[in-house]
Amino acid sequence: MTIGSKPGVTDALETPAATDTLPASHGHGLPAVVDESRPLWRVFVAFLGPMLFGNILQAMSGTFNSVFIGQMLGTRALAAAAAVFPIVFFLISLVIGVGAGASVLIGQAWGAREVHKVKAIAGTALAIGLLLGAAIALLGGFFTAELLRALKTPPAVLDDAIGYARLMMFAMPGLLVFLLATQLLRGVGDTVTPLFALLTSTAVSGVLTPALIRGWGGLPRLGVTSAAAASIGAFVVALCMMGWLMRRKRSPLAPDLELLRALRVDPRLLRLVVRIGLPTGMQVIVMSLAEIALLALVNRFGADATAAYGAVNQVVNYVQFPALSIAITGSILGAQAIGAGRADRLGAITRTGLQMTLVLTGSLIVLGYALSRHLIGLFITSPPVVELAQSLLHIMLWSSVVYGCAAVLSGVMRASGAVLVPTGISIACIVAIEVPTAYALADRFGIEGVWMAYPITFVSMLILQTAYYRLVWRKSRIERLV
Image (cartoon, rainbow, N blue to C red):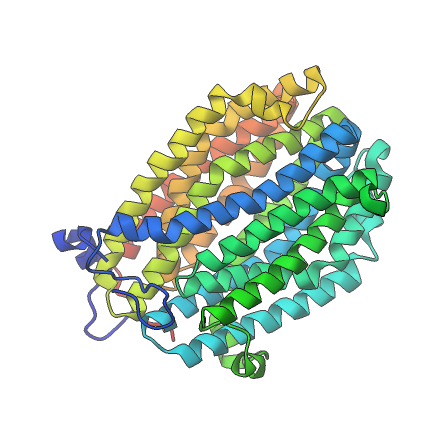
């Protein structure tokens, strides 16, 4: 990387002033990154807090669905829903890279106060999301059964899993636009609007799921597919709420004629989005494919193991949310700092992100171990399955803080456009360590061996990301991409 006279990353890490504070808000009532009047950790909290609560609310929607399914329909129904989760995650991951690349570019444009460029980037990203969603709905919706059979979904839950998955496939265009919108808003420093939208989504889903399971209020009884139908209704209402809030707040990303005209794939911007987003998207896709491979391995141990897999994932998601939210915060604040010509703040952003990961994620890990039986019991009623899920949770929960630290380093480096090597490290660890280790340890230790692979992978990932960050990236120099 090269730039003219802007400071390098090494300068940022070695400058004591970089630990002080980060520009004040400009226009539209949204904060910019470098607020000199506040300590950096407060800037982090102001950005992180609403995003973290929003992510928790989004997870709560899935959690409520799992609780309702497990308690009202039984373990077999929960296993059917859990069998679909990696597939849906894989499909969503196709657009996560687009959102990650576009949010970095929007962050840099917003830091430079170039609002028209913000809308142009957003238009290209949303157009890509719509095209991907349409392709998934057409292709995925018609081959759901074949895919689930290929994954060796237990026959006892196959029919329910097919109905659940097919409905989610057909809903992908709207779901991907909703998820993209929340990512793009982060680029302009707005995490409050997605919070309100997700609060609405959680409330709607929490009411609709049990109503559709039981057929309350004259609604049809949909069984396992109740959760999918409720999720669709929830994100439609939330997307409308988000659009209304953005218009009211005069957000630079509010739906208007300029954004509508920008709703097309601009080849120049597409190249930039792909440059940053494609490696990130590939990482998420590889992660989701690895989860699918591991799910196929777990399925060999029967429906109880599949249900335990779903319950453990629910608990781990909550523990990892702060870590992932902190990494996203570091990436966006870093992008805005670069756009504002303040690359000297990147070192302070990295240190603050690591410190917050240790405190927040570490605290949740302690609570997770202390309350593990009660947490698993929210999803599963069968005592033997509760015992199995609890033992699996204990094996890997601690490694979430390690994963979080690696994500912070990768996120800050992504803010500068450096994505190939950090993403390559993550993909290599998943492909060359996680999956082979899980299969090898499963042969030796049974189902517990699958979960032993996670901490081994996360520790390897942190060691390699740290080596690249310290020895290569922080000695580079930073330039704006847009």
